[in-house]
Amino acid sequence: MTFAWFIEVGEFAPSLRQEDKVCLESEVADVFTWLCSICNLLNIDLDKAVMTKYNGKCPRCGKNPCICDGSSFKSKLQVPL
Image: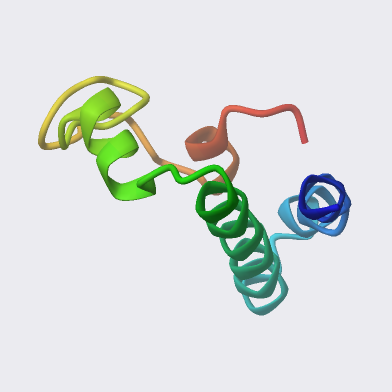
């Protein structure tokens, strides 16, 4: 049931398209909360998993500090909007 809620966070993609920060913050909170819930149910330490995989580096460029060119909102996301 929790996974079903996680994939039902269907307002997230439209929020990205609208670039409405208030709406986006609300949707990000929903996604994060449901991801944390799934990790809790599976006994996964989310912080440890992220640090193990990325070790404090940017997931996009692999550098610390990040050297990505984030000149615009859409370029930061690198998703077709």
